Length: 88
Image (cartoon, rainbow, N blue to C red; front, side, top):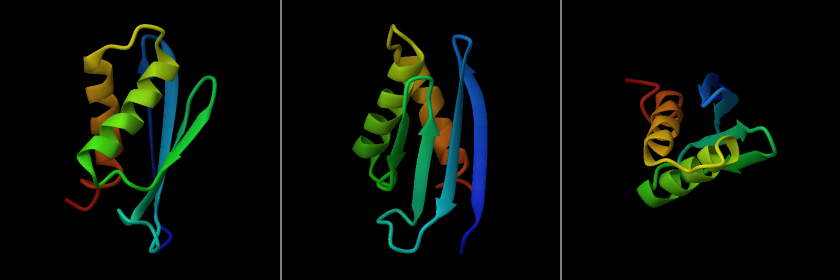
């Protein structure tokens, strides 16, 4: 159950790396950590739409001084690709 997945992408030239791993005690079944330019952020509640959006917003805000909705959507899709949609 210790499967790990990783994605790396850029927002306006700033590289973001997100790693996930299955975590049995997590509400979503996943632990996700984003490595951003100024901080690292962790979440285990990405199964809740509002929590996923809040997590993605924090990641996008860290990468880009101007917070754009399309960047939040990009981050959400990257998170889903290595967690919720990983087994599809």
